[in-house]
Each structure stands twice: as structure tokens, then as C-alpha cells.
Image 1 (cartoon, rainbow, N blue to C red):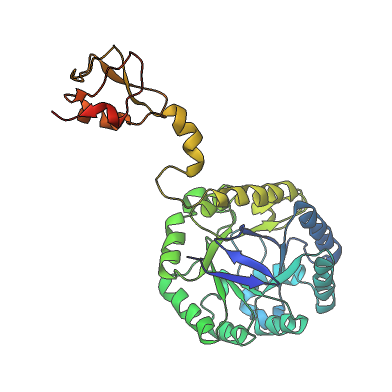
Image 2 (tube, helix red, strand yellow):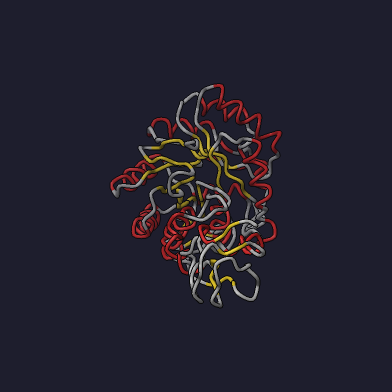
Length: 349
């Protein structure tokens, strides 16, 4: 049975396809279009298919109270950070066009209604929604009406609150991918919580799922793929010497290239049933044991542990598992030592 999938710009996403690795430039460019382009170049060299930005229109996104809120991974207010790191509309459009000129897909996370409207004007092919907006149902409703696929991070939320979000997208028949996330930057490994990711998958078995990861290496993403994840997202930078709150949990060009290659390999390892693969027959032929004589046996003689045993290869007629069933039965012919037995050689009393 084919597993569910969605499409973004012709890229099929689901368990029957290689995992989609999203390189999130986010705000790592610190407000510089040129730095953002340098990061796009690095993502392109790494083989990334999707570059994700963050669209911040600060006045519509935050009230003045945000000027007093300092994130755990910074020493200035979230308001100041976003004001410093946001791109204006012209620069963001230039970034989108640059990403697409490289043959990659540009998506972004709108953090406000105005940001969503800007991205709608850009006609982006899909929307990424951050964990902080997962339960911002008015904004989700606004974005759902655009009719474009959505990739929804679900960090800091419960299955109950995610159900409300999914119901909005289902109402508008919008395809939605659900990403498990832990919103700590960086995330300690013991808080990755694959169990939570699988709980999310089990609650929404017909939705594509994946991981938006903030740890310090690719291990969490690779583990997620083994469990069925189809979308992987990590922050991205062209080099780790950049400054900015998300650099510490970003992947560079080499790590992104490795993640794309390794996740595709691990995806091919999934599934299967516990039975011999037909390709293993060449090994079965020499590795399995079958019954053979270890002494000359006369016609009419009884088979005992003294005259038969189990030996490689597995090309004989009677597998080792039948050994006890053959003991005590009678030889229908004279058998030389070191012959593989056949069922025709054996009869009951």
C-alpha cells in the first residue's frame, strides 16, 4: 500500500521518497542580504533542495512588551533581535529570487499576518509555521486560506493543541506536514524525545511527519529517519564562525551534505519483514546445514546420531530443523558416507 505523500513544487515528500532536508537560514544572516546569499550558495553546494527563511515584520509581529523579553539564547530582547535580523520586502524578494535562480525551493516562516501577506504576494509554494505559532489559531486560519501546503512545527505543544491546528488545515483541504520539535537552542540530546515524535505520528497517521532539530549534530535527524521521518529541518550557516543566536545549533555546508546523503541511505533501510530476503539465497546455499550421512548406511538400517548429522551447505533436500524427525526412521537404499540425504532415502517403519 502506498504511503501518504504531499508535493511542493513537484518534489514528492513522504516515506516512499528520500527525506527532504530543509536548510533553514532563518535569521542567521543578521539582516544582511549579501550574507544570506552567501549562505544560499553554501546550501546549493551542499545539495539542499529547500532553503527556509524567516519573515519578520516586527511592528505587526510584536507589541512593545517584547522589548523586555530576552530569549534564553541571547542577551538582548527578542524585539531588538528581530529588528536587527529582519529583511525588508525588497531584500527578501531578492533572496527568494536568488534561491530560485539556483534551482532550489524558497519557503519561509511568517511570524505575523503582515508577514503572511508578504509571502502570499511572493507566491511562495509552501509555508513553514514555527512552533510558537502552532497554537496561534487566528494566524493559522489566515494562512490556511491561501491553499498552499504547510509544514508545521509542533514544539511546546500537546497532541490536543496540535489537533486544533490540524483541524484548521483539514477544513481548507490544505496538506500539512507535522514536525516534532524541542525549542531549546541548542537542545540537549535527552530532550529530543523520539517518543513524542512517534506519539505525534500515531495521533495523525495520515500526515507526513518529521523533525525540526536544534541539537549540535545530525544524529537526531538520522534517528528520526530510522523511525519514519520524511522531513528534516536544521538551521543552516555557511560557516560556524558567524555570530547570531542560532549559529550554535546550525549545520554548515559539510554537515548538510552529509545529512542529505546519510538520511537517504537510512530511509532505504526502513521497513521489511522478518523473513529471508530473496537476495539472501546465495548465502543460504552455503550457510545453512542439511542432513548428510557420516558413515556408510545399509538399506533398511535405522538412522541414528551415529550415522547421520547436519552439515553445510544448505543445498541438500532436508534442512537441519528436520534432524529429530529423521532419527529412528529407515534407509530405503544403501548410502555412502558423506552423502546429502533426500526425503526419498527415508521411510517410516
